Length: 284
Length: 157
Image 1 (tube, rainbow over the protein chains, first blue to last red):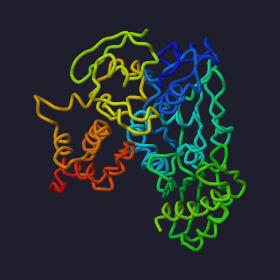
Image 2: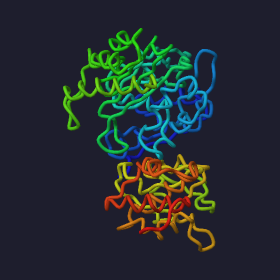
Image 3: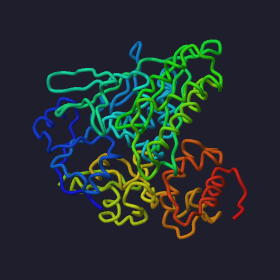
Image 4: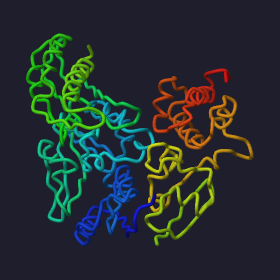
């Protein structure tokens, strides 16, 4: 199948893109890597008048060290993020989540910012960015603003990015030396996770001093498992202690029921995957 | 219509295309390169895999206009001087196919995999090819072919 007809714009700067967005408003759709948008256009689930391709804006690509944070340009491809040594050293949870995101071809084309702006609750990047307390830099015609991860994910496929705005970069506070693991449960290869858990832990002498746990596909947005985080702090990194803390993983979650599993199944899965993720992150 | 200029299998091409035209359509319908096939049409199966500026992509999930200025290699551009690429040769040696429909994509993805990891383990091969589906389920010989191409196994098919 092929998409309905549209006009195509390929701006070379963020300013140019914002001008185009202001001109066409909700008749326009932004194209990042296209790995979610193009299937939607092909199935004619959406038929924008104008497609604004950000692929020619070089300033939106790349990873840089910015003191206490690692900054990932919104148009940086997953494969680039996944192999970046700065990300691996200071935000290993992102590296782990990207490693098994979709498949190799999609990772070559899909972008970090595009996936986050798309905000699919089963997407692999929401939980780890939320868990690490990322900040989202959003450009509009009036300038840029920064939105905390807690406020970025609003609802199913909905973020804090307003009409006329573009996500330009994501700042990930450094978590140097933290152990990290992304535990993803899928039925078949390269599918969306039924549930996945992103865990980062700081272990000092066998004791978990701090933990961050994010949940994928346990509600309409990615979620922090704050009860688990609180229960883990100060606990030994043992199977028994982690199992007890992980039992609270689904607290406050409102997971969907679908052909892959009902809500109760997902709640149970969240506890199991949280235990596995935290233990793997702690290296025990 | 949008003007695009790109290199496909070593040849420079230039065309006016509708922005909605997919790269796979452009390759097949404009350039006649029907070696690249359309399998699922939902970006799941990987049969349409080509290389775009040196890395593998699903060409049903890229617009032709996005490939403006790029270098594209299809299954038809792998052989040199009438000699099959070592991965093509390995697929033939190991009988890494049944009906053959997924083969162009499997080979292009295998070449990409070996470019990044010249000596992959069996698990790395299976993970590296997870975006390519074989509905005959002939995966064992495909994995053997990739091992063979990487110089890691004898022909056993």
